Amino acid sequence: MKAKFILIAIMSLTFLMACKKKEGSEKTLVIDFVASKTDITTGDSVTFNPSSNLGPVSFSWNFVGGNPSYSSFPTPTIVYNSVGEYSVTLSITIANNGPSKSLTKQNYIKVH
Image 1 (tube, rainbow, N blue to C red):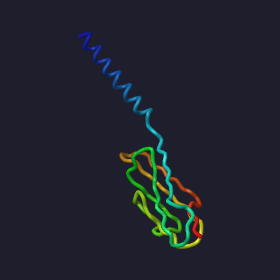
Image 2 (image 1 turned 90 degrees about the horizontal axis):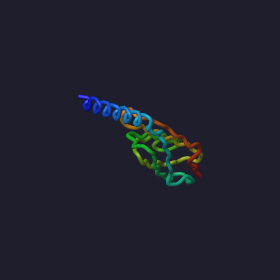
Image 3 (image 1 turned 135 degrees about the vertical axis):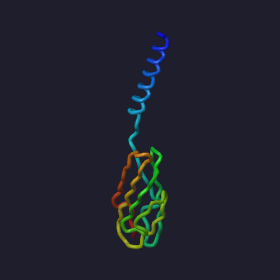
Image 4 (image 1 turned 180 degrees about the horizontal axis):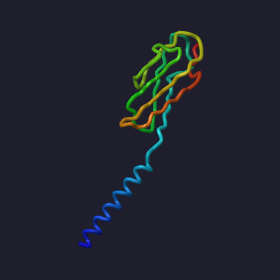
């Protein structure tokens, strides 16, 4: 009986330690993106590529001055038809109520 109690105590302690370790090992979501080119002429297209340290589930892109101005594709291609400097925002959401994060690069695309 004493051996059974010790075995249960060890299993419980192991379980609690594993849960505590899992809680403390949550990673912070880090995101970034790059454009195929950032200095373009009117009518040129740009492809955007995201990166994340965790597995994203959904993407939300906003392209000021771009066509289209919104995309949910992972690697969208956007056309810029007017001269100016334009910001780009990427939002990534992780599965199962995971974190979400947004990144804006101000004046990232320069159209001449």
